Length: 599
Image (cartoon, rainbow, N blue to C red):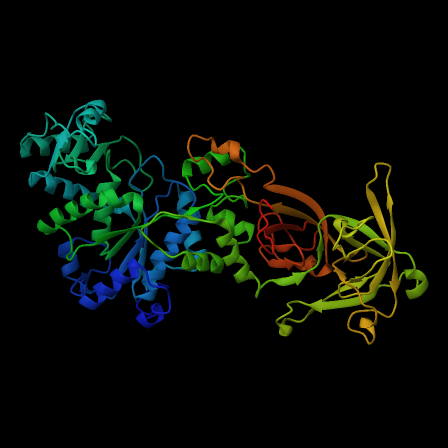
């Protein structure tokens, strides 16, 4: 929980430094925000001044727009904002930036809250919830807009959108003043109130900040701060028919919430001058608490083989290229969670890649390495056969007795004896991987081929005698003989030396399962780069579904439980489709034991 009881600066010192930590530590050392007071909730300057000294040493915020599902890039931002608040005895707010009445949906609100909680963070501090929505500040934003008009810093412009675009100029040509720029304050107030009262049509007028039409930063050429939109809002209903632009709303939201460090991705760097200009003007008018927030930008996450554009992700869903937002191939947090990623692995990934101001690409294998490092000490082991063919022990009945099933056991986790052992049966018929048999073995192949001896892991040594093929030449059965005094863990078991050691599942007690072998959704590192159609770069092998057999310990596996299938990698019982004990076992491959994509 991001609160005053969170870790201290000493804890933060154990983490790698970066420019954001340096900024925060400088501000704390200089007491930059120490004088500020907190009303107990977002408020203007007058109300905050009546409050107590702010209990949070810093305040950060995670401000998603509830118009889609969060993805891995948002996970980095969540870990960054909530993590910094934790490390410096601060508070991180969760704020829904719902200033656009046409895009927000409750479904997305709920999914965002669930994602933040799942990643291990909370917006509660003590007995106070710091869950906010920008639309609750519409009254103040309107008040701020009227103040700017009264101060001669804003005007109503009634040019057409095309006229405004042309007159804005470009990087080589300064803008041209709007013919409405010289209106009087009273005229602007009257016209703005007519916008508010629904007397003007959508697109017929906007409110613009009066700054500098010759500014080299085009964002400072009298940016639009309010537009008309006759649309019902999910929170405020039909109270408003004018809505603030994001660049106007965002700094105001930060100020009302007493945010100290407003952390954004680099695409907002060009907007920082307006962020500063607006808050300085509102500070001069005594509307917001001082010292005001400051914005800092970091490079967004660019992950190979992944797209994070909401528009493109929606296209994948709507056109049926994936099964939904939680398809395990999707980079959404719900997709990563269903794939088998853990909160700890995503936090570890975020820590390892750090933050910087330079754009770069992170290889997808870095994310998978963090996952393996998290799962290796946690995941129970199990044997599974994904491409099964039957191995028949031809002398089993003669040596061991007809119908005999020999109990075998293995540790649940090889490095944690306290977790106990798992049990399974060795009998006349076993399932093995089809690739474990070769008629004519290549060099270095030590598994099953005629005349070769191998150890069946945790069981007996067997000697291969051959195989049976069908009319098409496909192998349908492999045969071997058991060496009776070679059971693992018994005296003399090592008397027969072998080079091969293969996993198996007993036919008598194996559990049939659907196994979904997921891989990267795209076949190229930077899908959609240049003029390419990202849909043409989908990986046709991103999902293979097989019927497999798994050892009996997995019969009681619970949905979302993770395992290491020996030899194959890490798997998870699908959180949507898997159910234990009713013959509907479904496991997803999370990741292999090592990176093998494209090899």
